Length: 362
Image 1 (cartoon, rainbow, N blue to C red):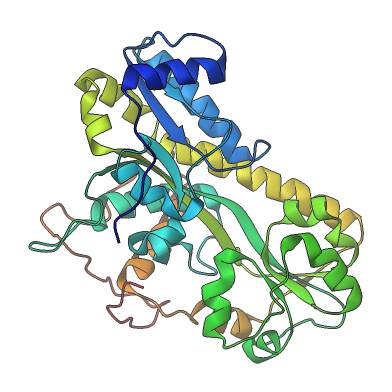
Image 2 (cartoon, rainbow, N blue to C red; image 1 turned 60 degrees about the vertical axis):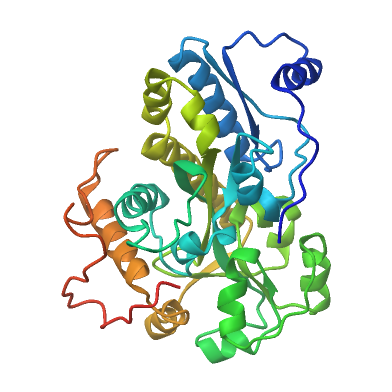
């Protein structure tokens, strides 16, 4: 279906509108309008704004990234909006792109910083169109991929699951990042909005929160009613996003400016966001535990069964292994290639820890 887009203003007129929004003239040679879509107080918002300032500095003022205070692009239309050049760039949810959906599977990330490095590497080496297949990234340049907002399993004293079956039998609030997991368990939920979770916990309408971030639980006051956090060796869920730019907008920039922007994007940006997100998560968990929340270590069989629920496609297997390597190595931005350059598709490696996987990339 063809996307309806707003009337496009001539670039000069658009710049004049933006002057009104920002209150100062834009003097850069190139102006890129970026749709962000995160709340003002979200850490992703802060880091993307910082990145936009770094773009100006890295290009000696030739490129300006302007971020409207009021985002006019629907969350589910960001990929299409950038491809159609309704905006030059956007931060888009990985759930919108089938090519990236595998990367936010449950229980995949234990260290969001190592995960950020691994995800970027796997994308660079593996997510490329095969010969004769349509390019899923047509019209886009991917500048960075990052994880943020780790999610956990919180429960009341009436529901401390020790198996997939007991989890599925409990009415839960389910985060968007955990919906595919929840659907795969054939579990029903009351469909509460986040604003109603505290009331739902107090009334017994729900017995826990699947994939909620610790900071959100703390800020909603839901930690008073969720007695336990079920602790896995990896985050139950993570949110993921991509920073993308329209290919024509990208090519409009000089080669020098493109290289300068690449140098401050990619792993550099993703690690900054991941590090801040991990710290925010630790701080929130510490506050919840000081307030009386009890940690319960998940049964290993329960954890592994849950991790395997959505299957293990080739890309997901590769990402798990690469995350483990990154966490063990503790390297900075430079990482070894996932694949030999001569190979166009992923080759599974033998492993004593992982079972044989199918070739499904879902």
